[in-house]
Length: 106
Picture 1 (cartoon, helix red, strand yellow):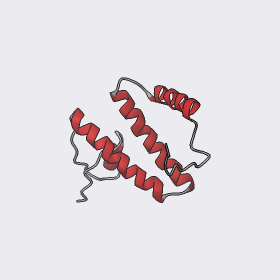
Picture 2 (spheres, rainbow, N blue to C red):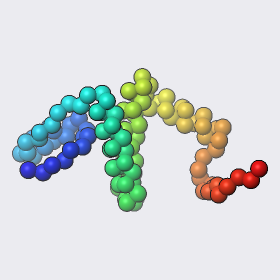
Picture 3 (cartoon, one colour):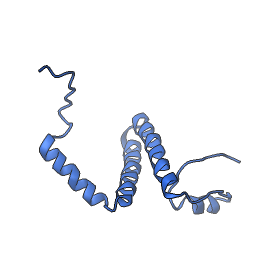
């Protein structure tokens, strides 16, 4: 038996069954779900940091799914989040100039 204890995508129990495994799982309450999503974010951030190329893109796709899930919990969707992102980019710029602000003198 292998302990996992983390949020997984909806099809994972069936995938485990189809490979002759026997998944043991439960459905989380909404409060537990939100905590598990943030735990999953931390996991995915580490995976993005340690990967490169196509693998990094796969991990970024997982992060987008988590963002979409959180948006749905707020009554929104990924399209709404993308529009907010575009507005922030329009107002504040993007990160592609690699500016690292050290301090502000007043």
